[in-house]
Length: 184
Image (cartoon, rainbow, N blue to C red):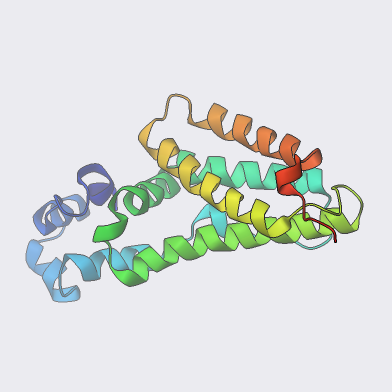
């Protein structure tokens, strides 16, 4: 995975992969049909931090901290950062199955976020008129942007994630009119 993260999927060669793995290029061909098969296999066996379970009936504060930690882990820990970098920067070049795995992680994370919102509204932690569907879709876009920026600019990544998540939290605590469902 390190070779693909460093060189990109299109530029990395199976020779480089074999050398990094300490095997011959023939051994790589023996086990895999080609580069796409190798990438698909590698990525399908890895877990991404965004696939976390936030649990049910978790207070908003605790769930929020777990989400911040998951986003930071996605760009900070070596394996997760490499996985995020491959998927963010090479998404169109990755096999459908591997790309789907990343998209599923982001979608799952957004679904967990939606459940957190629903529970928080039910407990009175957030306004009942909050348009949870719209806020969830906005959150999904923010997560994609944070991952992109996070894997491409490490200098401010963690600070940016924390600031963005706190800004989102402030936004949903006291939402502007366009984030509220209209009552008729």
